[in-house]
Image 1 (tube, helix red, strand yellow):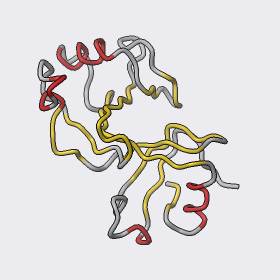
Image 2 (tube, one colour):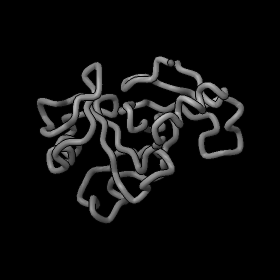
Image 3 (cartoon, helix red, strand yellow):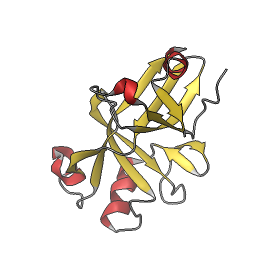
Length: 143
């Protein structure tokens, strides 16, 4: 058994070179009997929040390329539960999701910094046992 759990980072190895995951670091936000979910934390998406039609009223704020799954969806990680309701606590003061109106308000009023909130297009997902198998075959290392 490994130390896979929400709140840890995994880093791709050379085994994943040539794939979407080449040189990526992923923060796991869920790991349970059903599988794992995480976000690539070191790959900018190349667009800003205000570039998205539904958020063109927002101030510029960087988007990260969270992963190859559900790339039409926006995901939020933050450290501001006092400003943003409805987030799911992950670990160490980190929350997934929350009230999008409050998130946009916090960005527009500059109440949050890029260290306190990250926005992701897409996510990384694994079915039960998949990530463990990839870890054992040497595709990932826990950092």
